[in-house]
Length: 236
Length: 246
Image (cartoon, rainbow over all chains, first blue to last red; front, side, top):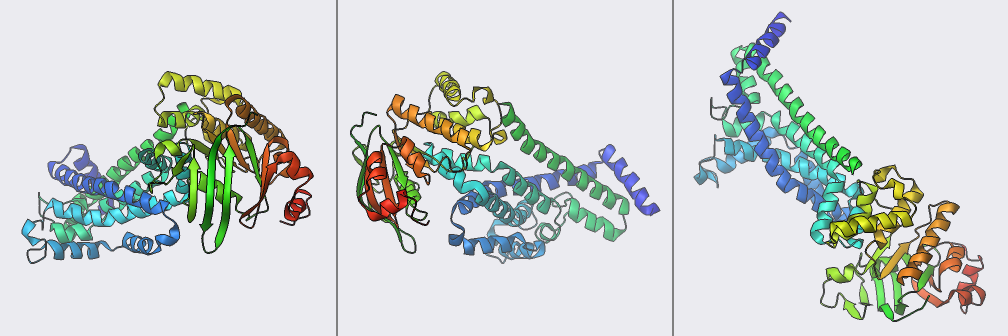
């Protein structure tokens, strides 16, 4: 217990003094997970909206695949990406292994099915009636699509928050394809594993606390945006 | 009611899911009239409405709107789609303010801001909800929401207004208010109204012409007075006299 308390005190010292090592790791984590979630949003939201508007019976097979991928173990995702981008793999020529790009690809593989799947479920609940209402009011295809997404924004925000939570906290995939190289591909989760194995619990706890704080701040921001849209509507 | 030229017509229109649910040989609607579509559940009334509102494609048949064949070139063009609108049984309001809801169709058509503001104000006054302009649509009662859905649908003066059992969930006061609004719109704008209703008294009150559907077929069409006093088909008679179990 004293070790835990000491660790927490040390952790806060590292955070408050903006320890350069810690900051570097945090920044890389945010860049990798932020890029992966942004790309997953760009692909997952339109895909989820498309599937959500189709009759469930016609998307049964795709839905099953999506649901399976939502539970894809990170180490399996990491292994597949590793085999694809390793020197002997089909994408080996691009030299992506042990780079932040490889980590983004791995995290995209984990977040995209979650964002697409939850968006699909959210849109399926009310999307069809919104789509028909917009169409019958003379909306173009683009405006109809935008209206459906806008009306399903709470579900979509929920999907993004869940996708972000999945990737910021995962360790297996980034460890395999990133290699946990100091100053290059070391992110918070892989650093925690390393520091714990070395017995440096203070830094490990510091990183753990930082991970929680960052998750809290980002989720609060998304929650604010989600609620903020609602408040804006009420003011109109 | 003046009656006028043929605004909408269909030929050999069918819709088949697992089995055929609708089969209409030939039917036309005149501008400025109110039509009541009656019949037991599963008679094909709502399917017919969805087909002529282009929400579903017919299995076979042709639809003509303002003299032009819809889907003639295999596609539905936006200007045709914008010629008519529908109010559903359950009002679907967007998660925004009442005024933004009413303005939706006008914004979609690129009306100038000032004109949108004026039209929205006028329409809210017409449906008796001018004090609700800034309220969130989610806070409205069922009757209020249906009146807003109607205001939103008629804001851009559609040629044809389709109503799918719009008063099925309303109390008598709201039903009366809704019917008055329909009658006024029809009178002022010569708007063609095609309304599906399970309430034969409602059809009797407001429709100029009544169409009786049964098992996917149009059985009889005629002036409301004739359909309710001396229908030609025994099935129509059974239905309007309340002897048909449905």
